Length: 407
View 1 (cartoon, rainbow, N blue to C red):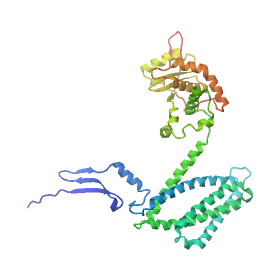
View 2: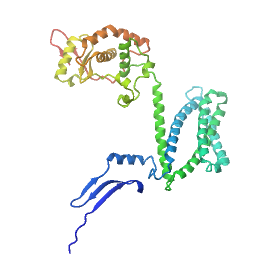
View 3: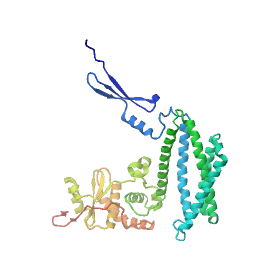
View 4: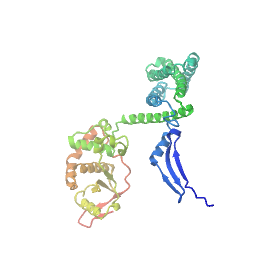
């Protein structure tokens, strides 16, 4: 007797909880083996990414108040990390780090007293309040954060009171020791509350991932603010563009402090979305273009410029695919490089969509460049050189009655 073969279908599902499964593929063997995938790869990757930061089975595996609590807790952790760095800096300065008069033994002893008082404070706090933490978890959680703030405040103000420095930092250490005990104990109680599926360990582990991300964000924000405070007086391509465009519009030169608030800290491609004003100041200039990389028409344009507009200059300018290209002479100096970059920016500002204004930009340079450089020096700028990548491709050109030569 012949038995008809039944069609076999195998479905693939993905998910960490029975209530949050999603089908990702269907496999059939009749008439031939085939695989039909469901859902987008992005959705699968996103779910895998979330699993590193939220408990397994989220959100059904935790209580409804888990998310709002974690959001505020992470914001608090972020601000705490930034304040911790500031208080540590103040503390290290107070014990003499960086001063010639400070001794290693003295600094070590002060740090030892600070840690010792913190340990003793933690033991005493546990002795008197340990049994009360579970029953008043909400209150002690808030107290822990307040005591942590108080401890960091003590560290921040300790340099202001050198005569009682050790006493102040010891008080701060005791305050933070209360935080360590109360925060750890109440965190355990809250974790048990959040765990609906006996997954307290998973919730605790994912909180560690969340706090790590918050710490990384805190580091990035602190470093961002640190570099934002810098007002460099050297000229790089972006600062050159900013000061020149402002000078061409107003006749005034911006100071390094003013430019520092306008220039990009992040790469232009990463920060242009948040600053359209600064983006408009960016000019595409290619410095040190290789002559042999130009096509036939571009070479003809370059030779014409060398024989007409830039006979006495130690650089050549030309337009290429919307960029202003600079070809540097083999005998050019750092001053020539800076002038060529300012000239290229001036040409970009004066150029219309129909033609490149070589004569007009050269006339502007002849009339205003010396005055512009003098005002830069008066405003505190260093005008000796342009901070740019090393120029490895240069050229040589000879203009005269005989045949021109371009290397």
